[in-house]
Amino acid sequence: MAAAAAEFMELALEQAKFALDNLEVPVGCVIVEDGKVISSGSNKTNATRNATRHAEMEAIDILLREWQGMGLDQPQVAEKFARCDLYE
Image (cartoon, rainbow, N blue to C red; front, top):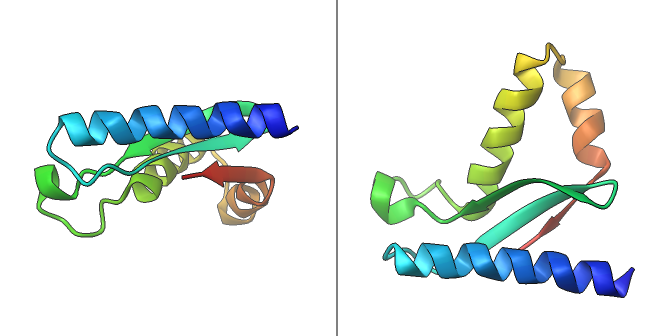
């Protein structure tokens, strides 16, 4: 599993580089479920002028929209999040 974790961290670093290339604080993340990346994000605090738009919030918001669009209710969303790992 250590090899997979290193690969996920590498993907998070790619997101951080994307943030840096876009004049953001260089932080990125990926969210993994069952060994598969299901979301990613990078800081967007400067672009949005919103201090809450950190990489993990960007990635989480993508998942929330997707899961709510699938009709999942709050307990189901919480259950799915409980099975996820975040690499930042």
